[in-house]
Image (cartoon, rainbow, N blue to C red):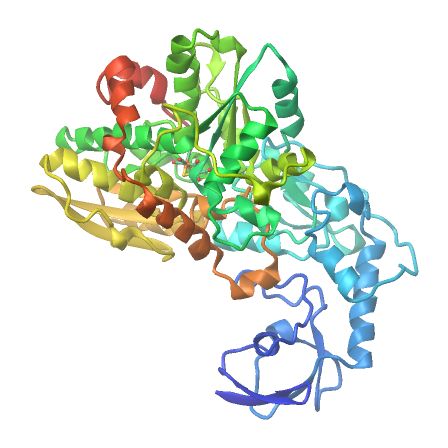
Length: 573
Ligand code: HC0
Ligand code: SF4
């Protein structure tokens, strides 16, 4: 421990603290913009300036280590004026159309301008002239709103190890984007949206599909079916002021009905179906000398990462479509048939925590009989916007249930949204199929938690199966390199593109850098899903009565010819 004085308060803090951390630990909130704990600690924006006794110049507190006996002042005239000047300079070159900005109300720049008391911008700077980049199916980039904080650059390079974003050009012309002014849709970006999640302003956002969805709802000739991913229910409430980790499954369903969707189904049903198909696929590969390790393919950001950076592993991918794509295919076949609706009149909308799902839904591989399995993907944030626009009082909605048959799901389906969840769900089913006996303990704790790479050896009858789980493509890269070098060997691997899995996907509600210092988002949102799993009567995919029904009435056996036609695909280079 080190003793330091901040604003006349003498405190003891761990010696590895920065001055910023020390101050915030006693409730003194030094402002920051570029700082993002453990991801972007570069002192670029100079908002976090403080006075340190004995130092001539103001110091950037986000990178300044505490020292024994240090005396710091965070609230002097000099400090306040310097911060304000920095902020005014930033604002003078910022597209200030705040009223129509997607981040209006949760922009970190807007908040600071308010908190630091910026009343007018004394000079109008020269404006960045770079067009809005709409080349990607998932990500929109608006350089006029970019404040060059570098958070997206760090997350893309260091966390995801994709590295398609960088500072380009020099001096006043500096922008953040792909090299040679290419569109982000024209470089090997994996659409994960982690750059959006960390952007403090509106410079990065998802490509919205809200208007298309309203149009479909308003069209009397369209039967519009919506489905919601597991992770959405763990975070949507945050958009309406509920504490992080609040489960809002019932309210979400009620809101979707009030928005005018004809049916509200649960992607968790698709997840249960995925487990059946993927579980049997794994058993088949294990028994018949198929390609191992088998790797999950439900995270479209991961699939694209594999295609661009590790094509030698493409045959390792499970041939299963992702759960919402499977459900889309079932809606346009089984459900259409049962209800006598022409699939051409059905519009399937998926609400996802993910921006890569927008890209995925447009892939040719994910269609059947001439129809895309899913027509539109909305992020959790976009759904919140629609609910607000419709003036629905979300917090006071009653809890409602999903619609029959394709809304029935198990605890296994719901944990898909957290890292390790797909693996655990699969193990619950595969273990019972192999042994023919009921599992005593279905909680596979070894694959839970936020460790970057998790491993376990699981006994399935006589089979000892080695499994691994990686989340974030940086961790995926590490794991794949270990396999390539022969250092590690596995039978089955779960990979999710986003750190934390879907609960912290690129389409989830924004969490400010400040809140990220005190809240463990991955853990709190994942807890909501594990709680829902616990509360479910049925917690194994193969015991879902509606899953049994659909195999009996329609699909036959898992991995049947029909199942292959509708529910499987193949990604090639
Ligand atoms: Fe996920 Fe999924 S778990 S990818 O993170 O598999 O987006 O939540 O919907 O499809 O189920 C996202 C979340 C899904 C799919 C499921 C899988
Ligand atoms: Fe990088 Fe992901 Fe953003 Fe693409 S979507 S630029 S891969 S962080």
